[in-house]
Amino acid sequence: MNSIPKTGYMRDITGQRFGRLTALQPVSRGKNGAVKWLFKCDCGTQHVALAANVLGGRTKSCGCLRRESSTLRSREMMLRRHRERRAQNG
Ligand SMILES: [Zn+2]
Image 1: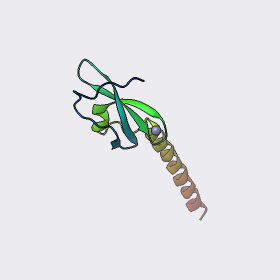
Image 2: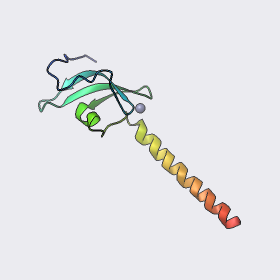
Image 3: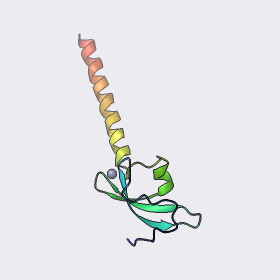
Image 4: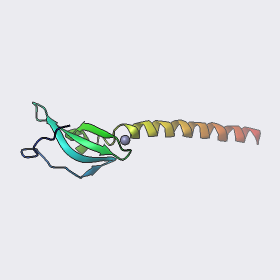
């Protein structure tokens, strides 16, 4: 992936962390001025996201965070069911 010059960009966020994402380099800029950056996620995945979304807190990972939290939810549900069963048996 080619890097693009940082000059003229609204903000240089190289090396900054946002949730699980660390900004590596800007990769593209849309006609409307929306800048896409290449990020490295804590899970090791490289992920391209709109800087505006990451700075605004809407994007916090490559997507692994969402996957993990849904796994966590189902685990909690199983745990609750297990506890209810124990309660019924006395
Ligand atoms: Zn990730």
